[in-house]
Length: 400
Image 1 (cartoon, rainbow, N blue to C red):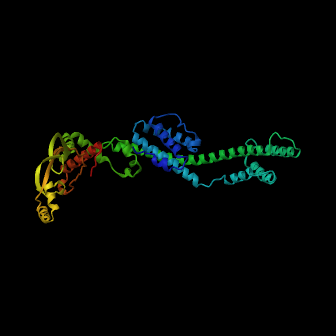
Image 2: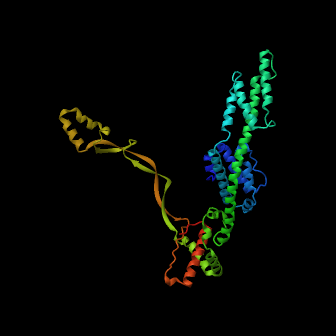
Image 3: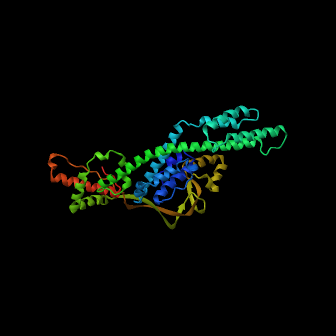
């Protein structure tokens, strides 16, 4: 089965593949089940997209569309939402990060030691005073803690907290504040892109409903019309389709004719010839003369392995050798004759005729548009064409 979300799961740029697969399945099942709850995936897994997804799925237009319980349509909407996530993440990645310098300053201080502390701390404290309030982070508190650790070190006392532990706690607090700002910055971009996406999505849903009403004579499968609703169909006048639909309802003969054309393929079934092998299980004896199984007599031949002793005696006398060679050349040497009976199976090939069940072929429609067709003939032919198109859509057959 083809996975409709494979592109996002394989090539998406947020999170990892396992999390992308979870996001895709959760969004699809959420719409399929018409759930009113949040998708339930933490922001850490969706990289701050959870709120935006919840707002999109909770919109009245989406919910009314999903109430039609059309899985192919829900798949297409899910793909559009996943594309929004991926494209928005690309936008975030392309936008200059406003917190690069602050992260660099944090990394420098994180690697600072006691000797470099005074110089590094002046820069850090100035930045913190300009950027954060005392409620968010209090540089004076940490400055005093650092001084206490130094004084205790000089007095050779065991401080309650070492320089390294205070530094680690400070870095954790600062990192959390930067991450919070980073998430807020990303959410602002996501919200901006979400509004743009929702405007396009809800406009497309509105156009889809209009298109569904216009093309109702042809098809009620709204998922077929989703991509079409993005096009310039609004400039087409569909009144003529409604006219043909009314004519088709009134004329039963044209409906019957169109249905008959749909079944004509059944009369053209071809017979194909197929061959098959059958084995006769009745065993028969077959004579095999080359096998030395049973001695049945004497014959003339040139088989030296079966010579009678009298023939080999000719070779003992030099004056008689030429007679032996003459008889050998003429294949008239006296030799033993053997035969063997072997059981064998007879194999026969028979032919069988089988009916070839071909799938229904396509419709090929030609409509004469010359002057002689004007009037009733044109109306009848185009109405019939309309009926055949409906059959093609219903039976999922090609129509040219």
